[in-house]
Image (cartoon, rainbow, N blue to C red; front, top):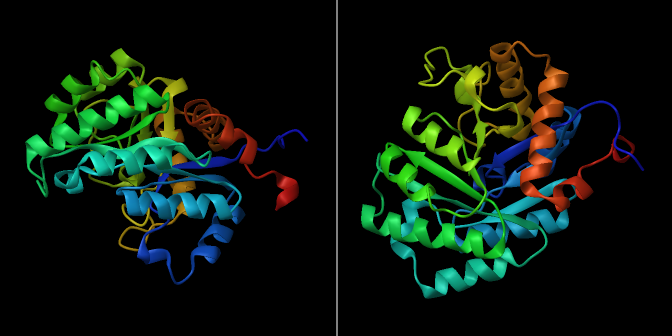
Length: 269
């Protein structure tokens, strides 16, 4: 049956497997449904986390998963890690590589280890023909340089970087995913949201982190992605239905046929 006319939202980045959701995960998803969030991309940050994300996506409608190694854990990169991630990425419910990238703010893993793991995951994404979800914090120059030869579709998650990484993303046709940070009073983007390409914008929660205003300081959850979409609409001078339609169409394009085919219909509500 055709999709309903009313536009729905896609939360393009959510850590739904996090222990913060263990007490009430089903209720969280029901609240998302009530808020017209019809698909959630469940992020995997380690092989174990990716397996949990895949299991969630396999067992519930309206979910897809990713599998990758976060820069915080990059020191654990090995041939075994690569093999485990590749196996997960062969599952139909796993639609992207990542979360991977570079984080020079916390430096939980040595920077050379972060670059090695990131480079390997970019290559894996190119080999498998899947998009790669990229984390960048205080590492714009190195991320920009590494993306130049990525050979894979890139999603720059919770994007708040400077002009250098923005331009690098523009050069390779990257998608820019915005989070609750755009609702923060002190958020001051280096590149205005009006400069972002309309056909490459996504909205996300990064839940349970980065809850948008007026939920700031609380646990974030997929139902709150509408607040991000509203803020994006204000910045662009667009209505919420327009932003929802645009970002949902973009999510379908980047994450592929599984998202389109499993997006919950109104009649499933």
